[in-house]
Amino acid sequence: MKRIVNKLKLVMPSFFGDRLNLFYTLAFAPLVLIIYFYIKWPFGTVIPIFGFILIILKKHKLSLVHDADNLQKILGLLLILGSFFVYYAVAPFVPSAAYYGSANYTVYLVGLFLMFFELSALKEAFASLFLIAAATSSSFISAWLKPLLAPFANDFAHIVMNLLRILGVDANVRAMGNVAIIAFPSLLGKTVSTAFVYECMGISSTLVFSVILVVILFEDPSSFKARLTFSIAGLLGTFALNILRVTIILLADYFYGAEVGGTIHYVIGYALFSAWLACFFYIYSKRQTLHAKITTLRTHVMKALKKGGDT
Image (cartoon, rainbow, N blue to C red):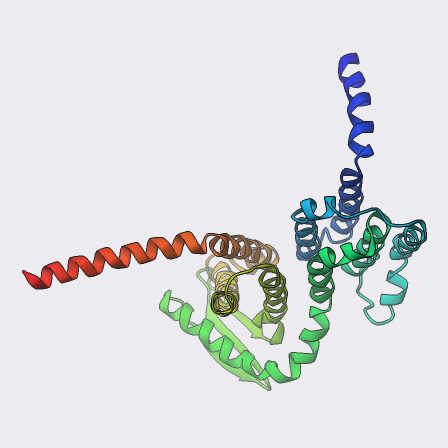
């Protein structure tokens, strides 16, 4: 035990004595606060964590940037301290805002960059800061789009109804004013009725995915055609994901009742969205390898067809 303590005494000063290690430790620390305040809404932690990962990917470039001067360090420190009071500026406009969230973290990161690096380093932080700030404002954009897109909730309900019918559920949609109601008898002998409103369409998650796409494609040197193709595929996939999410929730209601359906409702969105992000960006990162394999397969198929035609 004493040997372990002595080793820690040797390692800790050298670890925190390194400028980048100390910077990343301080950049990570507020994520603990965000997780604490968003423990009941895990989706609120996804974007800040993703932003932190983007900063980690900049480690080599940041290692080449010079230290900030003393005046800039003081300004950075003031921003870091001020970030803990952002809530009081946000709360009048967003009463439901947590005390520490993405807005605080954005200000905190700007201050941290100013404190550790010369001003030019902020361009390396742009992607992360844009991601966190834009994703934070997605709720406001979603509210702004509501009058325009809310009428399409009825079409969304009919898509889900048809999927349920294909799966053997006797679902129907009826209108109650401007709200679409989907109803069906469950296996437990009860009638399940669910109102389809604007929020069911998953516009917020689509906006967040769009922001992440913009950031990733901004950083990527691929051709415009490749980026545009993957952007369209990503957005269509996110829309399909929301249809799948609602269908799974209603199937849970159908088989197991509203209580289980409610639990599924709480977790399924986070699980599906996180899995979709991971799959999409894995495929995107391997796109050249996949393209080569598809081209090879196509060549083999064409040769086989040509050989079959000759015989």
